[in-house]
Length: 448
Image (cartoon, one colour):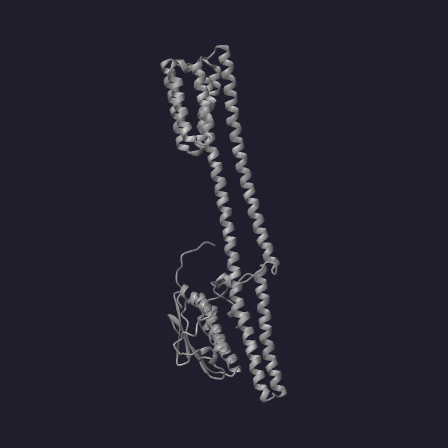
């Protein structure tokens, strides 16, 4: 029975778990490993981006340096006129600007290139403008591939037009023919740089997704621990304390015989052992050596599952009777062939929560009832008990009685599965009713 009731739907608020990393070294190590991996990935990405930017800056600086050096040398030798040198300087300045504003500089340098190819006073600088023009196009294509290739097409068309008009003669200039290949190569280089950047971005997005998945798994693990601590550890400890108090009250007036005492100690030892086993399970979930049990571990067996529900209910009733309660507990009906295992797990949890609340808050040695009805479509759990005198307050309207963390958590779980949980107080009687769909429903896939 314990193995079955430990299959919980994970939905408890993670704030219920107060997990100090100083008391859970494995959890702290997991956190440190995650932080280290995140820092390493960020460092690698920053290094790759820095290398790419550094390489781009080196290419731009080398192109401008070579261009200006040859321009000054040509001007001193009288090979080019001052207007052509000015056009070269403008192209170099636009190349620097292209590092931050690539599209604007690309269009502007294309216009300058067209003027140099079509205006005779500027044709002397066409050859020296090729490198800065190519750098501008490369940066523009890195930012926007389509615009980069359009700029290259416009530059080649204006060069062809200038050649047809006889303004420029690339065939007569071997140096120009050698460097002219950089213009069509520039957008290709920019495209490769853009692809590299997109690949790095995709890898970073994948790593970020994996980090989020890891965080979700960690949150799921902690939520499972919070649920198990509340439902299995604290509630059983509370029951153990109540049981001991009940025995002390009984044995004050009537000391038990040896056989009765031995049976009671055996039963209490069994409960304490269950708490110890559950605590070890919680520690295993915290340090990662034992994953939380999921619905994938269960088989579809409606008859067997219904029998386990009945056994669980009767076990809860036996424990309440050991505290002196007169319990009316029964489970009617059967589960559907394709039942929702999450709903059944929540129903198991609700049986535990109901029994624990009766043990802690009901008037001792009074009548109480827990009844479950399985009608094929939904499960209905109805419980009732007399309110403890010190819990009832001054009135019977129910304003003095409020559900605790356990019932709030169960209400949230039922709501997520399409069910509902309600409670009322009338004439010092607490009544709890829960309705839960049993049919398996299709749910949109979520991020794992």
